[in-house]
Length: 147
Image (cartoon, rainbow, N blue to C red; front, side, top):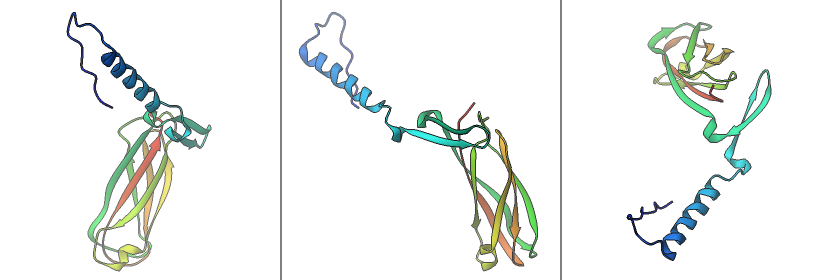
């Protein structure tokens, strides 16, 4: 949307200037439409679906290093936690995926389990299914409604 130049003091308002104002107002009205595609749904565990405008939601993309070039034995588990650095109104939706940062195939056989999600952090465990030297981390995506 183009910015409208401010009029000088004492400048008469002409048709061109009023036309620019009307166009800007119409552009603003179309951008703030209440269309359904401008909303996000966060399906909370306790209160069911919550619908808010995308601008009223919060999305966090995070990363945690789990092991860096470390020898791991099969069936080993490592706990993790990630603080959101913002409080959510309800426990948000959290997804965690394993990232194999190393060259070994052993890092491909790793799973993650989310054990607990609160309004301020997520906790879980990473399970290793093979023995070997690994470098793995977690990508974490959080979608929720801030407090």
